Length: 112
Image (cartoon, rainbow, N blue to C red; front, side):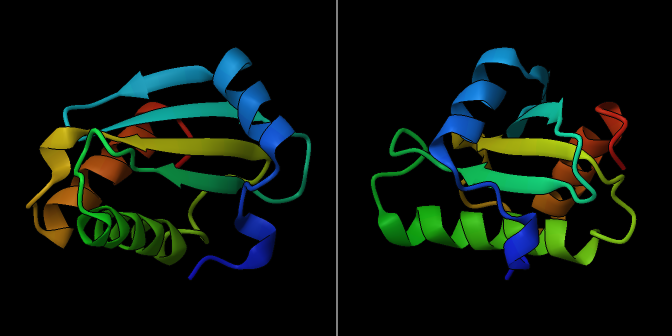
């Protein structure tokens, strides 16, 4: 689980990020990011019902993506708000495939 200080959960922060953030997109996931002028980077993972109607599937993907982020926190640059937008193509993929695409997205955004 991500530490509390690394979670992006306030509605106004998420709306600002979605409106003014820059984007990097991949086959499995999209990434919106923006500087936040804090000492830590904060993350949100969005897996909508269009990805899967099953909450079990959506929650599993969400947990896997959060774990990828948690294990890489030491390498991630501080001072960013990041929202991971998971796409339908990620359903049924292994943890290693998701990890590769999430890390690639963070590298494209120059956050990792």
